[in-house]
Length: 124
Length: 441
Image 1 (cartoon, each protein chain N blue to C red):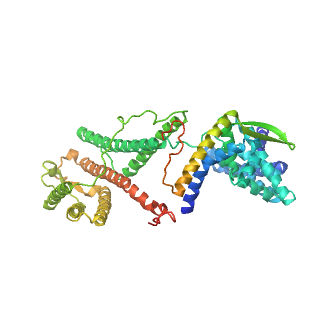
Image 2: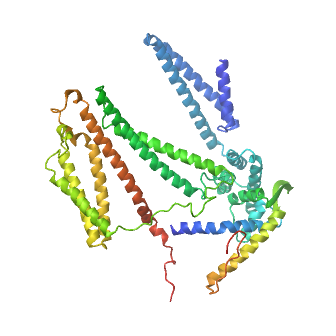
């Protein structure tokens, strides 16, 4: 039961981070398989069944652009960050940095509570 | 034979299109199945020739019956042959890696939306090929079918893989679910109430009309309980389905939100939960005591029932029911007394309450079971014209009244028990190792 609970919480914690990792990695052009390997090599392993639908969703949202191209005699679909995606990524990275430093302060038990950086429309 | 042949050819094309039988095995399969069907036709002809004269006079029925049986028999053979050939050819010629990948992608593709079908499959195929190439490079040899199957199985079940690409992966989303669940519960309660009232009152009114008009008897029996419960279940299921369909439709509207516009003023308020005041327990104790005294003082049935008492007499089950009712009332008095005198004895009070609820359900169940023997009609005093219908009406009233009370009590008990059961089941899971330690002071 505890293992299952931990797994659920772990997946929940990772879910948002995966989007950030994928967007960051796609500042350079990659196709799905190489992207997945690259993320796994950096400690952010992601399942194919999560990655490919996520790439499509991000593309539909206009954050990524893709292109079918032949490489090594094979047709592959290459993804990269769109201009809109770059803007969103910089905002997300800023948010991530704020959350990370706040969380570190909380974990280390500092007595100077500072609010997490408030996003647009969010009251601090 | 032409129509039969074209039907047979269509069947073969269908089998081929579904990939049930391997293409190279199809000619053998076709010949074997044709031979089997021809044998069946010959058997049918011989049987008909022999059975025809015997079934003289009932010829049409016999022909139809035999034809139907023969058709079914052919279908069984056709399906069985497919299964048999598939099995034989799988055993004889194991699948190749290429075929396995094609089959897997075909299965995924059958669940994908048509507009994205080719694009998704092409990307998925490229990914699988890349994985296979990497594995082959690691091993330094081509992959076996088992190794390819391992890679494919790691991708997951085709339906799940395809499901991830669907635009909508839930019927009711988390933002709508609280509203949906509230609506379902409310609708089910209302439907159950309306159904019970209608189901009980309609036959009762009808029976009264029969008595007034001195017409045909009612013919009501306890077997109606199954009909009552069966129709009730269907009604509740239909309500549940309708509410779910409405919310699923609302969920499909882009941007729709049930929590969109609300103000604090518009919120409905509910009284906070609190325990009963001692005065409430005192009032309950007095009322229950008076009620129990009435039952105890009732020397014989009917007691001050006016004109009705002329027609009704206690039935064989009456003494047991009277004893059970008095016992239940006394248990209620004991519970109220403990609450007043020893309010901290919560466990004992809970135990009495649970036992009392169970006893009430058993009591009502017994009333339903013994509805014909609670009270009996004093036929000597009833006018001859009503002698046949009045016992039926009395039995019906006892039956439906008890059944309604039983259903309501059981439903209330179940809903009251659910939070406790949920808490009880979830209790072990709430403690995580290492989290229960108090920080060192």
